[in-house]
Length: 361
Image (cartoon, rainbow, N blue to C red; front, top):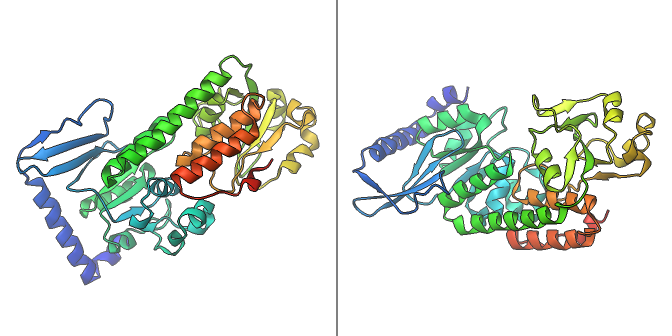
């Protein structure tokens, strides 16, 4: 429908023709030579220099596509809340001209980039606004790989698009590097990555000799839905020194379980996902769960959701792993120390001062 409407509007047609001409021109460049930044470590990023010493940026995204930028992108559109948060963390809030729908449901936007609430939205993963995106004339659009059709449509119209799939820590790092290189913020991206690696190493050393507690991670829409080993939450649990009771399930992402199965799992600790539509009290007072160790010991915790959903691979997701570490191993990583670390993280990477009180458990 969007493409049909698009051809009806003369001004947009002119824009598209100009963009297509630009794309054709780009393909006719003279021979290129690789810059020294072509290395195995940054396999998604290659810089090239033509015979006129004009440096280009070539990026291989998570769909295996090659994106060629003649210069660092300035006008940005993000159709994915995870990459929108990345743009804030990379210091690019002033470069964003459009974002995904439902921006007012993301607390971090109000806190760190309130102007985002007034930006044009480019739709959702179910209904992406191709025409609206074109009208913004972006230098670069960043989309999740599940919007492959929109990626291909924009590419045909001469719009630069990076498709990302930050579904684990390594893919998150790759996504940050790609966006950082495309926008001239690679140093900032590397600082974030260094922070992740430093904190992960600290946590791994801390939990190395500890007994692993059995963890049940309840979904946000239904408590009897739990994260399997294909989910980012599984990575967080294992890194924090726990054992995911549903970690042997690998044929789906969120698995539905019965009360009987949950009782058989008998977790030591129950974690409630951020933004759950049920409360901690609902779980503690559920008579069907009375025999579970976590219920007997009142070891049920709701992951904070005051800033972002730390159980999704946003730039601040490292805080979810750190929070979970403080829950599982509070004697070695006290909760107050976690709050200090969370405060420092948001100050350094989002330039905001968080309210420590909302993190009181």
